Length: 557
Image (cartoon, rainbow, N blue to C red; front, side, top):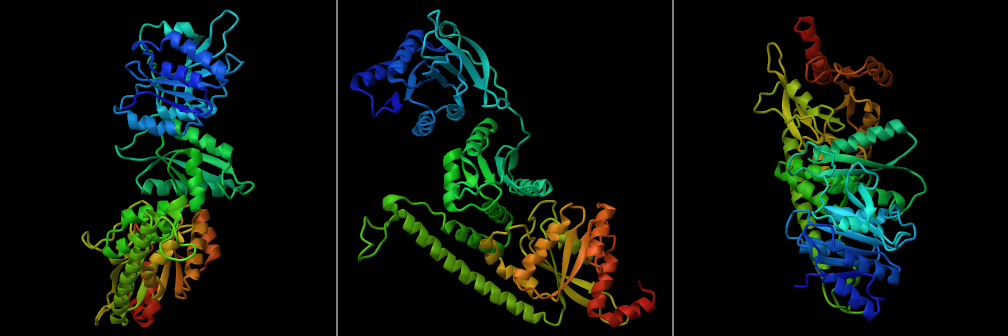
């Protein structure tokens, strides 16, 4: 296996130049110092002759593994080759760059190269000028990774090239890095956002995105913001901002970038090209959370259907991979490709899932017909407003039959129905069915809404909707409007009652504001039990007004 490689702008090299560079590839360097000075002097001469920068990568044994002609940024194959060759996890590479420039002490223009250099993770980066100074020495500087530095690199010291090469021990400066209290497999995520002039709304949207990331089990380590200006259909964000994001990804050691909006397949590929890191949009993040939360067979079917519909248009193929199978004009080619097989497999699976969900829809319809004699109430609202806590408190459920209630977005996906019993003196108690539905969210992905239509039918068929609002959230009014808009889009005509939750944690101004918007609002606290009896009285008056009046007269309430 070839141990040394010449990469970069090698196509235009003369044979003599290529032979000299290959000879430098096979020079051995000391194991306990930066590099061999004579080899670096010859590298500088070749840089002057080519009028291009040259980069050398040396391993811990002193063997040169790569010489890159031109800038590191233009050598896209460098990282993939290095990852394939590096068998040990230790960061033992030495990166040495000979810079072709006339400002001998100025290496500030290496911003683009610094991104690729961070990907290499060398123990140090030695930069030196190809030109000799007035004293006949070449100026050099030694850099090490530092996440707090502007470009991800901190200057250790500056000296002439010979001083570094004469050092009799391997230079391994300490590295500065930010520490995060993360679990072993927790992903580090950088958030990419586009902001407007409304600062308050920007902060709320960012807080919601961070909540989604944490609900998915990842950790948001940094945020990259850009003011919304002229629309760029190819990347949305500007190229300069994306280069800053690429550098920040390396500095923070992020493994994923999440955008705060839905991206087209082309936009996602373009962003990954500029950032050189996996990119996920908000819709895919929500789908991933749903996939984690789905516990029932029905929920898993609905999530899988939504994911397949989302990914169907994101299959990538180029050139011959876009050929078609069949006969006739426009269909002749090298035959069927893997892309077409994947697409056909997805289409068949979607058809099967739609058929299964239709059967579930019919089954639930039959169940609803069997329970037509019982009134039905559905609790709807934004995600994480306390719907599960409310149904647990209203029905007085035991530990075994309680609905899962956690302080995270989309803690429960599957609709859960429980009986709410109203005792009646001298007769059988009155009963109604109350359903906890999946939470809504801003810009709910269309594939998810379509896949969960069978679940949302529990909402469509309810006699009364309890629209739960979290008054402790500063954005409660916007969340309430989003839920109303989604219900209107689903053509829901059931009576709606606004229920203001968490009144023990909110400001008095929020109570005054919601009372001005809606005179019939009921105030409760699902955790402390405040106001629950008033809500039960309203429900009983809605379905059995005579029984309620009789009980009130007899002093049962």
